[in-house]
Image (cartoon, rainbow, N blue to C red):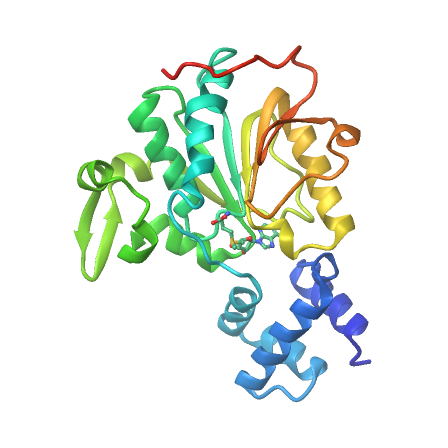
Length: 269
Ligand SMILES: C[S@@+](CC[C@H](N)C(=O)[O-])C[C@H]1O[C@@H](n2cnc3c(N)ncnc32)[C@H](O)[C@@H]1O
């Protein structure tokens, strides 16, 4: 009792979160720093403490998950999404079903909502945005941001879709209503079906190889044929073909089964 394996199993039984899906050294470091902060001497004590105190449990999960995000993170990839990927998807069907998986505090799904509203009005009514971290989701739903995470938002969009709110800015209701936030664990919960576009960026980098493969297999099941997966700038899907994905562009993969890829650029609109 008290080993890492014991802790992973005890925590899984009590909370449902499977820590064995994450890279162990990173996880252990974060847990140790949390334990030092709350004065837990060992794993059994930590388990007792988070079990007895719901608020502490929430803080613990929040500490384990790395919530760093920003609007239009890696803007050049969002250009590819706007200029090539979305027009390609819209040539097949509309409105699009979109899922932002591991959405953290909402910067990613709101970026997508802004892009759709601005460039493809009416083409996507609702974006599903999920995360394992309930606290991050609460902040996401509130839609309040410091200016430093808004640096990549074009000025015209800032003026049109945000209002001043204390020290920061708040996304207005017309954009907030496009996004539905929901708790979802990529490791344990089944993926929602019939998606045209999935964004999962800077999430699986923290996962073990087998957890990552499990998540990607789930995405392939969740995507309609021809649907697209958008990954983070340090992520690549190895053995994409084996999983049923083909490389569409850097950081974009398409679920097979929709005929040949269109060549060259696609026009927007
Ligand atoms: C670094 S943030 C990425 C935010 C956003 N996608 C981006 O690229 O800016 C990673 C997010 O993954 C979430 N996460 C970690 N494990 C998860 C899991 N098993 N299921 C769903 N989300 C998870 C964390 O809570 C965190 O909010």
